[in-house]
Length: 151
Image (spheres, helix red, strand yellow):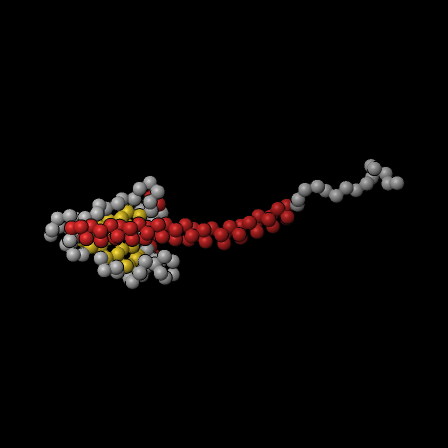
């Protein structure tokens, strides 16, 4: 029987190398995941803004059906539906300019929500356009919802 005083026990715990390998792996995963997550959050805010823009457009068409003009006063520029500034949870301000027979509704990104530089618009004919910071999310023919300017 071996002498208990001289028996060799394996050390308990992790070595510094093992811990550093785990830290490197976690760092690599974070470097991949964080930009993807940030892009996902931006896209969700864009979808929320374009949805509100579509709702505003529907309200403008309803106003036109009731009043036969898009503006509050004949010959004016103030749209019949009031602008909607960004609320506590909104990333876009919705604004409108118009004439008796035309209008342009614009969703402008709120800097407080990290959407500075984003702009989406729609006209009475349904023509859509978008622009974003750095040339991303920019398309003159539709609402670009991806960084590569696709719709």
